[in-house]
Length: 259
Image (cartoon, rainbow, N blue to C red; front, side, top):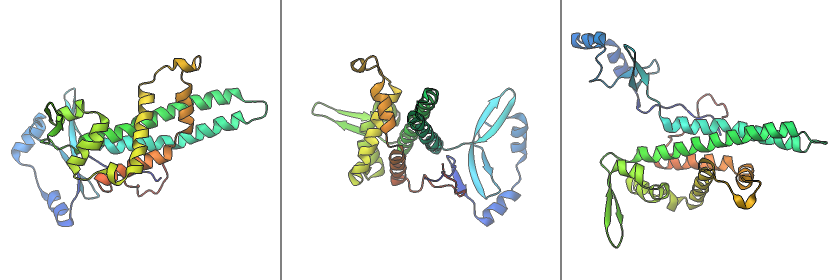
């Protein structure tokens, strides 16, 4: 998989005539007074880049200064972070098995390689799941209401309640299909199973539990699972899910480099 393109939360291409016009627009006297006074409360700042893009910024105040920082899309950042850990996962796994197969043994390299390997695995899993969950929450319109029906009652949830109270499984199978009016788990059922298995693996890592049945190897199942897990298939499936609901959200970077 190729390195993915950086994207910002709100970014629009500006046509040639619009770009030329925006370069000639001058601030009003009131704008200048507010700028000098650091009064930006009524403004949502944007920047105009040399590549003719207008990008939304957020305001960051420190001391007596206010800075305008381009607002990145966290979904892309989380996905890219997971992608960046792939090469390290495979490299450390390979180092460990080379050391294990070395005649006479090389326990020091085995220890270091697996220690590093599992660290990269945990980074990959948490980042990729963050990307998936941030995407789903972002898709829910501000005025959307989700109804949960049962024989006894009908429950109504607004966006804030959906994000905080509805489970991942219900959100991905019921809420998002209602919002987007199409269903990944119905149209791509084999890929959806991969996402459910990923959710289980994520829970194993984020909510790490002691397995007394395998004592004294308390984390044997988790460590063994991490060595067998299909990281490439999972990140490709998450990419397919994101792009299914938002076409070309995850795009390969023009640099052409691998992750």
